[in-house]
Image (cartoon, rainbow, N blue to C red; front, top):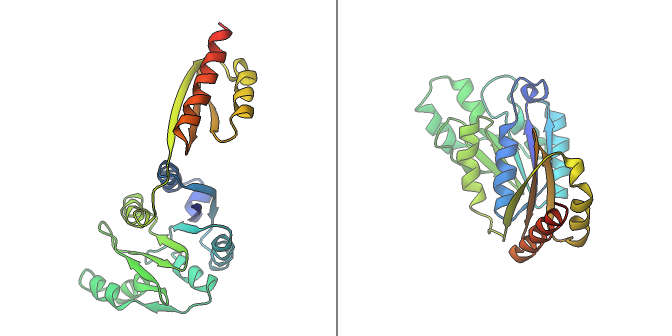
Length: 229
């Protein structure tokens, strides 16, 4: 399946926090045989959220949105999702009743309990705000532990695909291997090959759905490296 990840938060765009949520989800999705089509970061703005989610829901099989589900003034993601699908924002009674036992702050409880009409609730075991699913969009809290808790439940709904990954470490600089790497890339179109320069060495990652094809590409690359020594 193809996924689009949308991260909501002014704090990400300003550089105040690192977007670890998107990296976590992308890694998990890739390792379970899915494809992340793109990752988008947007501000806490109802209209922007609505536009990006509406567009993404048509471009991907499933959309994953994180951030903006709390009780503060800038938590407007649920409102943006409701606008994207032209649905009313309504108080979910189950969530409201549960949160009312934890807090006497009526305004905060009602805000966190408000989701687009018809949403399916995905309970959050480590925080207050639950995740919810509407059409082909899942919306999760931005706090990493809460996102991970709800994301794992959502991910379990999708059938795992085949995936195999191998990494080759090459000492030296990327320029040293570029011709050999290009040859392997050209001759192995079904294998995803990425080159990641580090300090004094390069990590080359080979991945794909077919284990044999991945192994074949790795073997070819290693043989080309050995031939040049």
